[in-house]
Image (cartoon, rainbow, N blue to C red; front, side):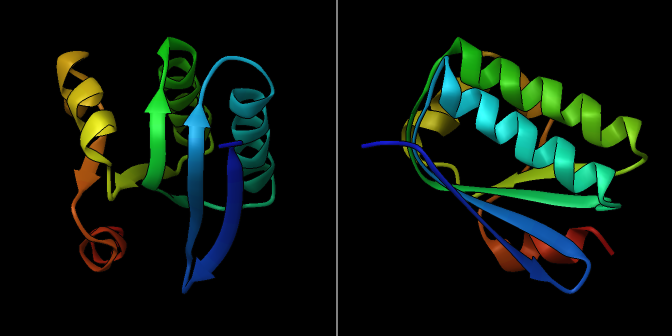
Length: 114
């Protein structure tokens, strides 16, 4: 399955719906560029919906961490929601759950930005 990114706004929260495999190469680079562009456009509240991400490698994790730095550099916040079991396990094993705010449902995640 190829990697896809769809974006939508819910109030002042920009949500990126991700699907497929977030791995080294164009996939990771495209996510990084979309987030960088959103921040440059003034977005301060970024939510990554990872429900349909089936796999993430170290490059994908690096993209998440680098993107968090980009968002925070723009005085914004970036949070994760709906992690698949595999992605959840990787986030916990790498201790990135201590870096990212992670939510089980989108409603709670959006509300947390308030």
